[in-house]
Image 1 (cartoon, one colour):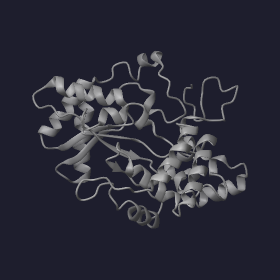
Image 2 (cartoon, helix red, strand yellow):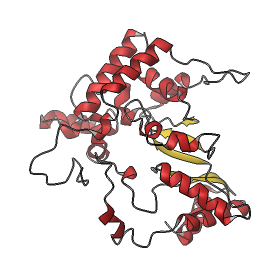
Image 3 (cartoon, helix red, strand yellow):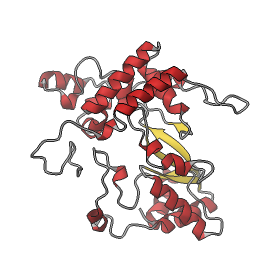
Image 4 (tube, helix red, strand yellow):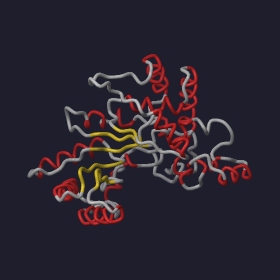
Amino acid sequence: VNRVNIERDCEDSLRRLGTDYIDLYLLHWPARYTPQSNWGQSLQYHRDTEGSPYYRNHASFEEIAEAMSKLVKAGKIRGWGMCNDNAYGLAASCAAAKLLGGGAAAPCVMQNDFSLIDRRAEENGVSEASSPIHENVGFMAYNTLAGGFLTGKYLSGPPPAPDDKDLLRGRGSLAKPRGRMDTMGWGRTLYRYRSEPASQAVREYAALADKYGMTLTEMAIKWCQSRDLVTSTLLAHTSMQQLRQCLEIAKDSKYNNDGSRRLLLPEELMWEIDRVHMKNRLPIFASERVGSNWYGEGEIGERIP
């Protein structure tokens, strides 16, 4: 990520889309090194990685804010933000825009992984930093259904294809996948959503959904929509049927027409969800599969701890 790439990629996107402007233009990954964008089971910050060739000359927050502001002023984008970043990245990006002055555009949104089994953004400072009384930045939650695991479709039947020790059955799942978990590419990368700690939490959440007479999908989406942090919930789907189901679930707002809050889930259920959460506050970053001979590598080859 640098000034040249930001401007060039925007122009390329405008041309491919056949449009005059982009509503939201996001950085998919931070330019700097940060373990917050790690897709494995590690959150530790390793200072020696700062000097690796990939990050050594990364773009500064000021360079990024200046390039984005140029695109906003040119009318090519309406706003910009970042994805897979943390509270430091958000606050520093906003501060950089303020320091530039001259009406420089600060980020207006952050997009991060957020679900019943990944509340990092609420507990690592992002929720505080993005509050209207601080940086006033919207939050788009992705993987609300945890790669499909929070639909419950992987709780019964064969395990996801990458984990299936029955090779013949695993090939059958690959031939007729239930979703991304039944693929060898994304299926391996998304292991964090089905680690044993994550699976245990999902089983408990599924039992709660059943107790309150709703699907796990409904509970997961409505829980996400109800959070103070979340301004937009991104919905992904495997089929048109699932898309219609998710849209029906997500049609209600957490606000009434007069601006007052509306309960999307019963208070008693919200409390029971929190009680499950307290047993393991970050299950997708926990794992029981850490071999003694792995020597600092996690499930998908990421550096751990």
